[in-house]
Image (cartoon, rainbow, N blue to C red; front, side, top):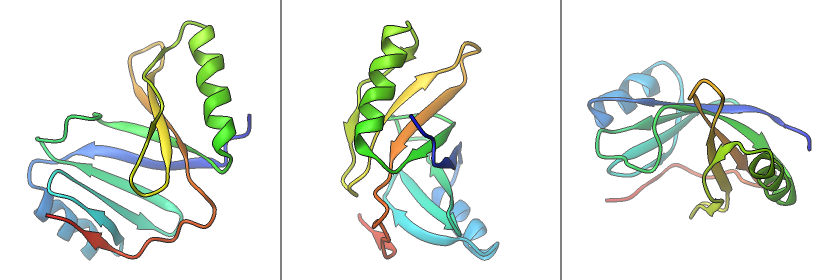
Amino acid sequence: MKLKRIGHIAIRVTDLDRAVQFYHNLGMTVVWKDPDWAYLKAGEDGLALLSPSYKHAGPHFGFVFSDRAEIQSAYDRLKAEGADVREIHDHRDGTASFYGKDPDGNWFEYLYEPTAINQPARTTS
């Protein structure tokens, strides 16, 4: 198992539009924006902004893998070791991930990110 990098952090925000504008003004690029969350990048590093209505995950940090099989292997290993992990799920942008907690209750995400993923900014309503 080889981690590619720590790829993103996710934080809660009270006003998603205001937060997107703030971080965009800091120089980040908006990659994805939905009504309940947004994803911005600064180079290869990402920032997920989670609105109060976003229920899939809370604040966390994400480790990136470039091989989808490594996500399954890591999940199987962590689960066998008794770690608190959630099921793997596929995202609509071609990535896949699972969430877990470290021994102190901090959330992390193991994220498969294809090397060819270069998304233009998108918004949905």
